[in-house]
Image (cartoon, rainbow, N blue to C red):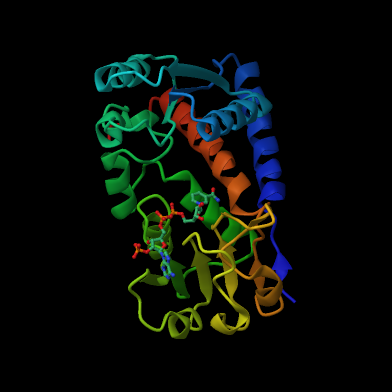
Length: 289
Ligand code: NAP
């Protein structure tokens, strides 16, 4: 029977450690770290994500500043809001809540984020750092996947990792992080032939496709480490992942559930990146990407 690794538990532990670290720094007379969140419009899901991020910041002692722009904000207004945070010495991290309302160009907005404050890891210079395996910010969900593997006691070095999904926010950066950690990586997508024959070879299997319980037991190698990034709402209203959890659990060495798996790690990694940005700025270490 595989071990179930809960992301919410790991996230709580990481947040507790960050809280202690920040309290120590503030006690030493350092300023409080600050995350600026830019929200455009009133999309209920985005509002709820932003509230979750604010709450998490409060829990660890990070100040969060919300810049809430109306749905009608122009491209220039949004870019100016981002630039003001990039130029504000009191702001350590900047997060632009995506998706932006229709008609706005998210790439042009992200380009206005100072790369040394880009805690979402989406600025092209941070993506280049990921691809060159150099210092920079990594996207939060992929970073959460790597932390969960660490918690499983799984060192990717030399292992065959199979990543299902190739999106620029999840699948592709996960594959790159695994490659940087010396795994042999295969990426699969909707055009992949005989997917099960490939997934059966995986020592590490990461599913990020958004298809309810897609990965069945006969697609998984005995003793595999399985990370389920997918979040799907079933007909009965409950959430489930891309992996058929109950069927795969007995075969896996370790597996993450949905909910309580990768999801909570995403916010923990945002806080981690914000603290990292703060510490780099405090130490005046940042030399430009
Ligand atoms: P996405 O942009 O829709 O990408 C889905 C990827 O899966 C694509 O590369 C697609 O292939 C591939 N795919 C779809 N159906 C497939 C199939 N039958 N066989 C093989 N590959 C298939 O989704 P995403 O943003 O990466 O998100 C993936 C899942 O993770 C979603 O459920 C999302 O809700 C979840 N998610 C969770 C978190 C978290 O914090 N836990 C964060 C982000 C996303 P093509 O490229 O060929 O179309």
